[in-house]
Length: 75
Image (cartoon, rainbow, N blue to C red; front, side, top):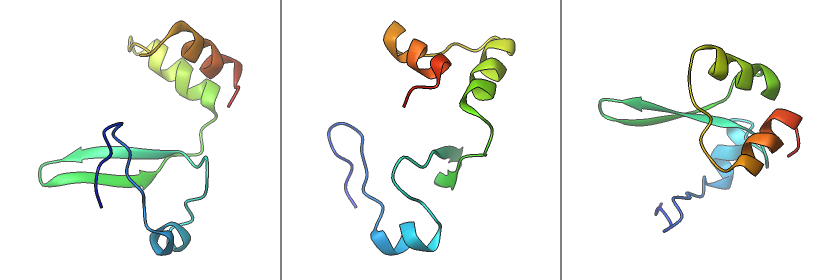
């Protein structure tokens, strides 16, 4: 696989089917000493993820429009 200039990677169809990764499925990238682990994201609601980030003092990166879309639950 190659990383595109936009930072995108295509996961082969066989792996997507095997692991239940479908379009718009959220995944997590976990940094590990020998590489990056790709896992399906937990099933917490988007609002709960945002609230957890804000309560622990984290910052939501991106443009204002992106943050508003995240808090409103728009796709």
